[in-house]
Picture 1 (cartoon, rainbow, N blue to C red):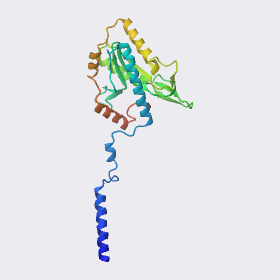
Picture 2 (spheres, one colour; picture 1 turned 180 degrees about the horizontal axis):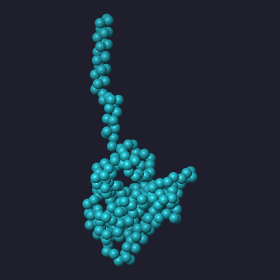
Picture 3 (cartoon, helix red, strand yellow; picture 1 turned 180 degrees about the vertical axis):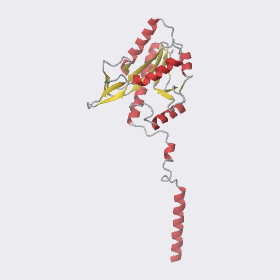
Picture 4 (cartoon, helix red, strand yellow; picture 1 turned 120 degrees about the vertical axis):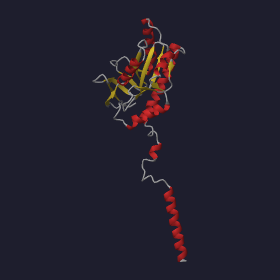
Length: 246
């Protein structure tokens, strides 16, 4: 009997060792599972930002269809510009890029709630929440400045390029002293209508929408894989690039 018990015990021990070795040892290689996760789980802030961008995209399409019929180009997604090749952060992401007969518009979307007022410095805004707490945030116009300058440097000067910051939340109020290119989503129609009117009375030749979009893509990308890589760089190096709460 004792011999059978010993054989049984040895068999159990052998089975346990074989199954243990067959399982991936996460403790020996803690980064193994993480390598297969391209992004961290979506945070509430990122989800809120994506919701704001979707709302602005829909309103932009409605407004531009009203103003231009089908004579405009609005990419359904982010546009990546190659503004600093050879550097640690060679690309920058644009939320919305609208190419119209009356200009090219670089649009940064924010889905902030609360009261938005000018900050102490021109590149800053002061956001005050419903609880009365205030915080300094970077202005969308500051985020857009390099992108607008890049297009002014790489595109023909006869095509005007403007940067606009759009606040998407219905729970957001804007201080009257904010710069005019900072608008609420409810003002987008009036803003674009005014830009179109000013362009027409200037007597300038309309932008060739198709040619302008092709010229933009010479130094920009709408590739999902490139945007994926850009976002990973930003995620992995949050201190190496200017990033803001959405």
